[in-house]
Image (cartoon, rainbow, N blue to C red; front, side, top):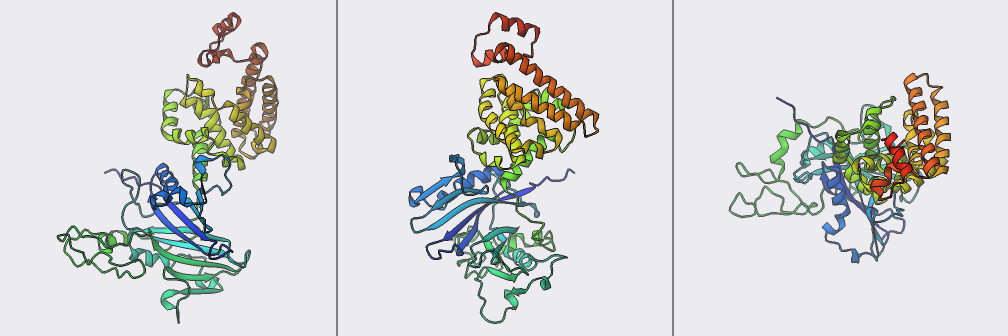
Length: 471
């Protein structure tokens, strides 16, 4: 029997409220998980509409910004929505991506249903900021019930290398003498050797602890469901036979047996959605190979076009609306954006004028990246894709620059002792030379005349007859 394939990652829609009204330092803040998905596009869609889903209107805020709607984004790569209330509270919505260790499945909309409980860790860096304004909260684990979450929270900061003795202070709520000062949802507090404070919480989605009409018992209020707020919840074991209410008794046996013995905060480090998307693009195109993939890159065809359309069309749409400009901060991100705009666009819109619609934007991105030396900071086999936007430009200056860049690429490949890579370098320069010769002769690419609605001259027609590919 074929093994069930579970989604690899969980995408948590996370909302943080920083209360500058009550605390000017920004140290007073609350972070909640609003929803969890196994599908990244669905999670992004939910994140963009998260505040509206909670009942807020845009008019409720003094300012409201969405990363998908603006070119100038100043709130960090991970933040998707930023809003500021008139009283000074700041709302941020972003995604927290974690491995799907317990093999949750999403519904048709890609959302994980049920009364999920989250082990969440807040790190406060008092060493760098004594007022506690530097904070970070991440999801360390996702569980279908509180019992599993409470078991996991005890070891969330610990692993084989990091024991309780590693910390200057280590407090657990169950063993604490006196009044617990860290709040009802916090179960572990620790202080690191350099002054960092760690607080580990068990939380569930806000407002999800509501009593409900139990449809298994004639519409009466069922004792097996929580009748109280999060703070007062008793979480009684279900008293009714075969009850299917959303309680610990439904999932306890299944998931406690699959629960990992420890939760390493190192192993569960956050990966931003941008980083995942960047890696997804680059890995698809180069397949973690140091060898040129001529068939995929330059052979293409319907199969490659279809695969790119299925896997990357939504991401390309975002790139086309300049929604991924933050990717240009780093070499790998810039390369991924160039691939979307310069290569994948041609696959998605083959035979259409849209295949060249992003050329000017991509040329600007590539030129700035080359000026920063980004092309030299990626593996050698990937470097020519920084130069293709120049070669695609119907401008003689761009063609001359491309030729110079390919000559430099040959020189670098000559130091690699890889005949296939050197062959790739010479072939790339030869291809560039043919582009340059075409622009030098016609001032444009005659092969584009048809899809761009340009009239072909007799000389260009004769050229295309002899050179069907256009070069």
